[in-house]
Length: 161
Image 1 (spheres, rainbow, N blue to C red):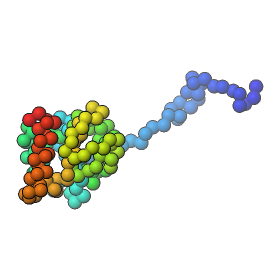
Image 2 (image 1 turned 135 degrees about the horizontal axis):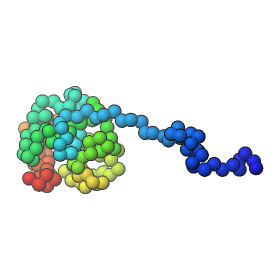
Image 3 (image 1 turned 45 degrees about the vertical axis):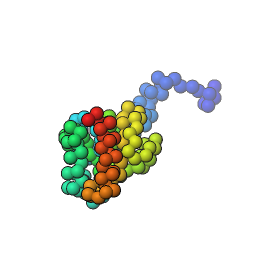
Image 4 (image 1 turned 180 degrees about the vertical axis):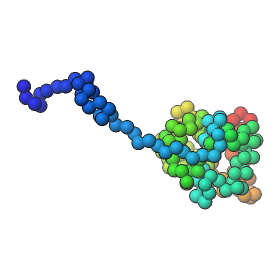
């Protein structure tokens, strides 16, 4: 019998090499987020100038949550500019039922689907909503009022308020 003709069973290979043959995915660093994620709602923002959100944007988001009968304890706010994470990491660590994207493109987060802003989409057991950045929603301008009304229509549908 030639050396190249020897066939080893899975049992023998497992005993010889043990777990050395198993490849493990590198451990993901834990996501840093604001909130307690009680209702499994991930809010992804992009604000490079702040660890989570500037005060005016946090105040705006808090008012939105209150209108939806929620608090910061119900959500997990991840600043993607500070803690870059794709949807796979967010899903793996936060297990969101709803994910709101403010100022982030779905493709940039490795989401395998693309959808326009203000169009809620159910995908893979999670509802996604994309919206402009909070910095565009906070000012008291005609344009921001229109954006806020579009956002509110979507949130009322998603959260049944």
